[in-house]
Length: 212
Image (cartoon, rainbow, N blue to C red; front, side, top):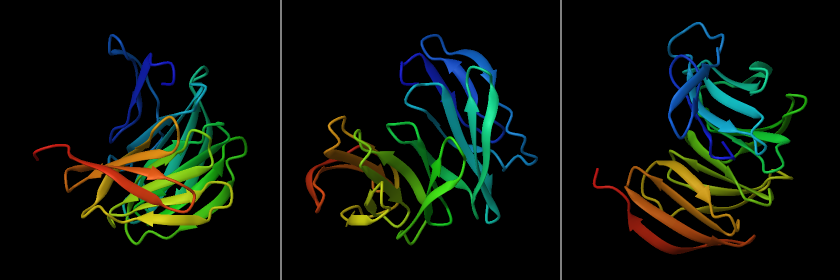
């Protein structure tokens, strides 16, 4: 969570909420899903820590994102979001948008208050596994199985450019707090760091992150 006190864990069955410093189980959020494979693959807290978005779905059939109010433990929205499992979910820094990325190769932006679709982003040619907003909310970064990182204008939905140095599927990425540096990692075991501008990214560091 933003205050560092809590941890949300997704699973086949449901997201679970823990007190972080003691790993004390607080409660589980019922997804209302019928099948074991229809579970939670990604979770993200809102910037104020009051909401939790969790995403999952049925392979090759549907993707769903649920947004809960953590004070009342009640769902705020249930959004039928994609045509395949959702693996990535991220709140914007303002907390008014949620981005979702799926095995269907698409990214959607949703209005948190209404649950309505705001933007549809299409340029990846394989499953989208990770999403991150820059600290100022102007950029959205996506990482995918097609081994590319794409930088988007979060307001317009325009793809600004693609970072194509990785050699295999990418599973995670994160912005530096400045919003002008991005790190990503995946199957090739290399963590790459780019300096970003609106016109392009410059690879500044590559590190072997794991042996296997």
